[in-house]
Amino acid sequence: MPNKTEDLWWLFTRQTVRVTPRQSVLTASLIMHRRNFRHLPVVDEKGRVMGMISAQDIIDSLNFAFSKPDVMTRDVIESLEIPVERIMVHNTISVEPGDGLAEITKKMTFHNLGGMCVVDEQGVVRGIITLRDLVGLMGTSSDEVGVSVSEIMNPNVITIGQDQFLSTAVRLMSEHRVRRLPVVPDGESGDALPKGILSNKDALGHVAKFASKGPSGQETSGTWSVPARFDVPISEFMTRDVMTVSKDDDIRVAASKMMIFGIGGLVVDDAPTGKIALVTERDLVRTLSRKKGNSVLMTALQYELEVEKAKARSGAANRQR
Image 1 (tube, helix red, strand yellow):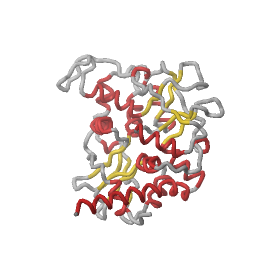
Image 2 (spheres, helix red, strand yellow):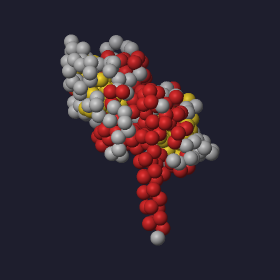
Image 3 (cartoon, one colour):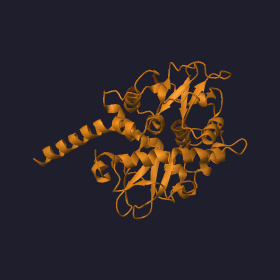
Image 4 (tube, helix red, strand yellow):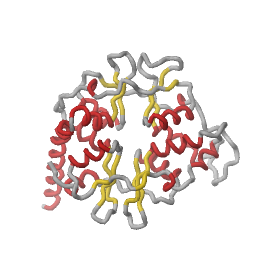
């Protein structure tokens, strides 16, 4: 197992996109939507880490905008023109040169983080490591971990009715600190599979749709001429393809599906309670570590990390010939 962060940088330094504290929250949300990111490092003029902004931070900002009655599209967009430094997490936990994978996973699970900056000795951001990276490692192997989905899934999820509005979804995500909401028919408590999933990335996509177009749907030159409601039924833009996994599947199966389809959560289609249950990236890392110990998590990651590192070394040697 690699002993230092330097040994892991070939894996975790592929993201170079970052923002500065004076750039707008709207700009950050557009970058996240276009690049399919949930986290962006915030850096100073020398590239040194100052903090992190996440999709969840932007959801919290949207929740504040929705506190006004009858909010219009231009009001929401203008509320996101504030600088990133107003809502970012300052002095965030980072991955440092002396850290190995065991220390990285301990930091991420202990602090309940979705992502951490990878920095060098000068504090300059060289990349980012996220829960998705760790789940990707876990999902590459075909060997079972020996832990079933039922052991780490969350059977008590917050749901939302399909006829509810975005403002309600944003409030639920912000108050309950969740990234996704199973969407059920209104009036039902979740006794069947959901009709869709609404994620915080779906919400950012709705923001992006109006950021470059006016409320009338026409391209604008920066002025809002026709007010329009921003708050719409979530059924208009929720994710309708619900990916599932069985409660009896090994967690490696769940990790593999998340990796292949590029998603952060799966619905458990045969949850024992008959209610909707989810297993997420956070469950595969933090809940697994909390319930089974960090050694089990490391075992789930170790094999593939060594294989991928060997491939990288082999490729580098071939290029030098």
